[in-house]
Image (cartoon, rainbow, N blue to C red; front, side, top):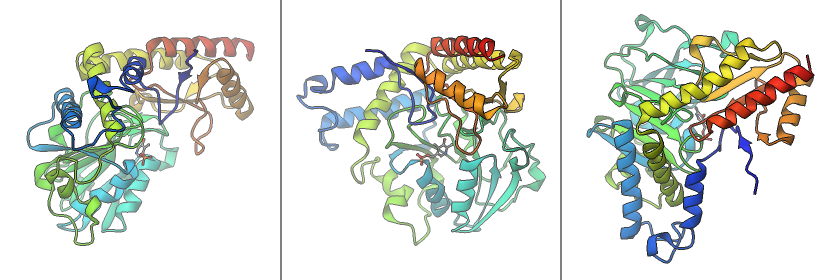
Length: 361
Ligand SMILES: *Cc1c(COP(=O)(O)O)cnc(C)c1O
C-alpha cells in the first residue's frame, strides 16, 4: 500500500494512526460486536463516544461552562443561515468583514433575514490580505459581528481579533479549528464544518454562548434552532454518529501527540515555515498573500505562468503529491497543510518544488 501526500482543502488528510484505529475497531467496537456506524445513537456505548468527544473538545479548546458544544450537520453553509435566524433578532442587523468567498457567502445568506452590513472588505486586492479594522466604523447596535478566521481559498488568517465591545463576535473557523488556541470567551459563536481539520464530512461543530440560545426567529425551521439541539444534547434527531466518533479519535491524537493547542500551533508554525521560507527565496514560485496575514493551514502559490502551473500540478500528482491545484477562482496552486499533514510531507513537497524549479528555470 502506498499513501499519497494529500494537500486537499477539504475533505482532507486525517492522521494515519486514527485511520488505523478506526479500521481496527470497524467490525467490533470495543467488544460490542458492531461497528460505530451500525449502533443506536441512543445506546450507552454511543453516549460514551459522543460524551468523550465533547469533553476532549472542551478540554483542548478550553471551552467555558457557559458555552454549549453542538454536533450538527449541514456544513459551514447551513451556519450561514442558522446564525442570522438565531441571532439577528434584536435589531435585525449584523456587521460583516468580507475577506473571501466564504465570508461573502455568510453575508449574502444573512441579508435574507435582516440588514447585513459590510464594514470592510479585501476584495480590491483579490482577498490577499486581512483589512485593518476600525471599531468606530462598526454598528454599535448590530446583533452580531461576523468574521471568517481563516480564508481557505485565499490563504489568509486573522492574527488579531476585532474589538466589538458588547456585540457578539461570530467566527467561521471551518479551516483553522484546532490548529492553534482561540480564546473562546471573546466569541458569541464559533462554528466549523469538520471536514478540514477534524473528521470526515458530515459533522458541523458549533460552540455557542448560552445567552444567545433561545431567541430564534418565528420562521426558523426546527432543525435550524440552536435551542432544539442544545436542549437535546445534539441528539434531537440522529447525529452524524461516525464523524463524531472520528472527531473523538482526532482530539485524542492531538492530546497524545502535541499535548495542547499551543503544542499543535508550534508544530503548525514550524511546518508552514518550511513552505513559506522556500517560497520567499524561490525564483520560480511565489506566495500570493501579504506576509503578515499568511494562513498556517492553506498556502496558495503561483509561478505567474498558467501553463507552468498546470505542468507542476500534473507532475506533482504523478509522484504522489495530490490535490495541489488552486481553487477555481484563483488558479495557481494551493497546499492545504492541516494538522494531520506530517512535517515530512511538506519537506518532501519543498524538495519536489526545488527540483521542478531547477528543471524549469
Ligand atoms: C469549506 C468551508 C466552508 C463550507 O463548508 P461546507 O461544509 O462545505 O458547507 C465554509 N467556510 C469555510 C471557511 C470553509 O473553509
